[in-house]
Image 1 (tube, helix red, strand yellow):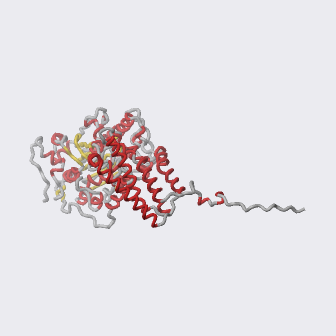
Image 2: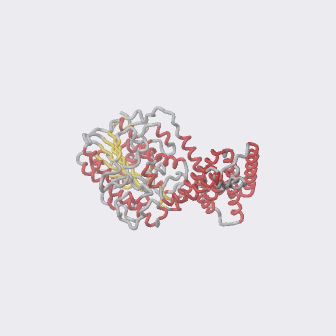
Image 3: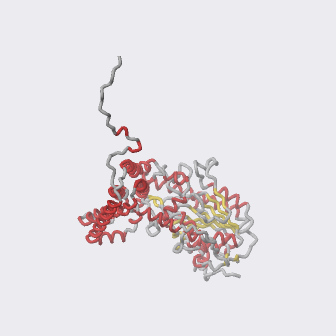
Length: 572
């Protein structure tokens, strides 16, 4: 027997039949205008905690006026950012733009909030020039969680909700209305709060480096604008340079140690209460108390100190287009060698013999991706044993490079307890200072080893050792960590750097410079600007580019302690 199915009404399609690609959190996608306003509101409110903190602390207490100014500024920023974004929010490209902005803003905001850094084109340059090891040290699980909830989650939500296409007429009306409302709020804000806002932004210039997303957009634009990729002929520096120093039959050697992230505030040789330089005591070390760096990051300070341009006229682009003092020394017959245990020389050693230290493979000295600075001393001893002519050897240390300070010295370290993480902002302040001080103590031990290696060769060569740090570091003072702040806003901890020298008796005689003369001027103000002419003066290079008033050796010879008139090297 054959049964038949009753006639059933046709099944209505359901949402389950929709393809997966069309799934949305809601069936009502946002208009492009509301998506722009929502994104701007999230960024202004959630990704600008550092900006609002600085703005609030800049006010004279809480009052109706300051509250109104703060709320009004927030509304204006939301409308301004939304008005700027709206013309670009079209279709899938518009969704992608907003999602990218959310994730990028969250990433930038994390480091602004965690470390108190300011975002400028110098920071962009540091990010681009950093290596994989430094990148790994900047990453952490809390950073991922922060970016996840502040950036990835809202971006994913926006992506799944979607944006509808309102048509060009409706879009034009919405954009016009948004612009009019933003202009109206701006007018009202200026009329009621101009004095408060003008005073705040004038006296707290760091605010413009904290305001997300304009800070990183302007920084990236400034970096790209300053990176002229047009090939140019390398400008020869000091083409008239000649050696005037009389040959004595013994090589004249300078070991120049470029420290990394060492700040003068933590050098006991300069008065710091803790003994962080015990290895340098009783070694005839001369310490210079008042030295200022050219910049607050390696990418600026390193090329600047060798360039001869001076801090005021310096730019990274200018430095790339010209020779530096190492080129001048090499051209005048001085052997130049660069030994690097850092992430590179930032172009300074591009035309001189260079050796990059290994990053692994040496038991007791190397970790997963970096070696301790003792490796430089071993390489230096080999070089000194081979010296046969006047030579400049530059040792570029890893030094106190953060945030993983605990990896810069052999465990356990002199000062305890320590901050054994790259999340330095989560550590107890004293533990963080202990860890940083351990890096300074270890750097002092390495300087002492280098001095002893030089002393061992002193019977055969005339040798000197000079140490100078590239920039300083912030350790949580005023809630600021690491370095890289714009020089006009940087605290002294990031710009006041240590410098020291060692000259044995034979070298003092060779240079006609008793150490007492040099000691008499050690307390004067110096900067990275002094290095260029000091190196030329040390090797007796005469050139119009040389300045006796910047040569520390010439300044010492001209001091009252020496009773000499200023001397300038002249061409013969």
